[in-house]
Length: 218
Image 1: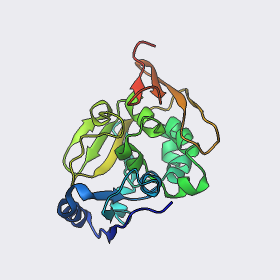
Image 2 (image 1 turned 45 degrees about the horizontal axis):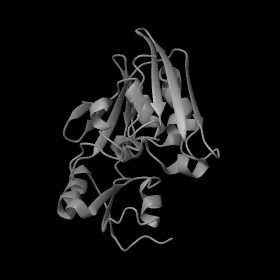
Image 3 (image 1 turned 120 degrees about the vertical axis):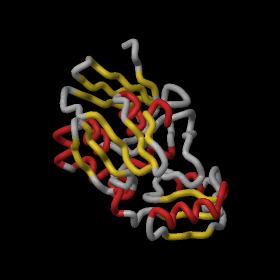
Image 4 (image 1 turned 30 degrees about the vertical axis):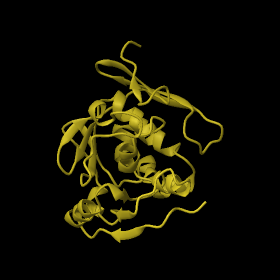
């Protein structure tokens, strides 16, 4: 399976990326790791004519803890999250989820920002973001995950708007994430996450609807 023809542009900074996206309009797509977009292009379910690569924007690879929040740059890769000591201490659920994403190749290339921007209801990070009421920070605004994950593969991102950071609450307590899948590297056919917080247990559901869900009545 071969994608349709496209132009490739490597963004040198944030404004350059936004300029390329504005010029490309609806025909342009952002790529970082490409683990979600490229398979769709191979199947020709997505046929952008312009790809804007933001993978060199290293300022979006930060992981910090400030005032009870874990701030994670959009270009942090799954493998980084799985082994990062800050994440393992302050948000171990996210580290556990990252360690189970895809296979070694996917974990070495895929990014948390890419998964959230893709907004697949089978996206494990989407579930964690929704159940913990994470904030999605973009080049233009900040919004809660419940507002960002609008529908199946649908977000309110504008054509030249980029995900910059995901801002989670610190949650070091008991947790678990389980998913049913045909093979270890597959997306979840269905999944559930739980996290103990000072306000009580949070429960998130994967692949049970058009978007991931927080089970507020559980």
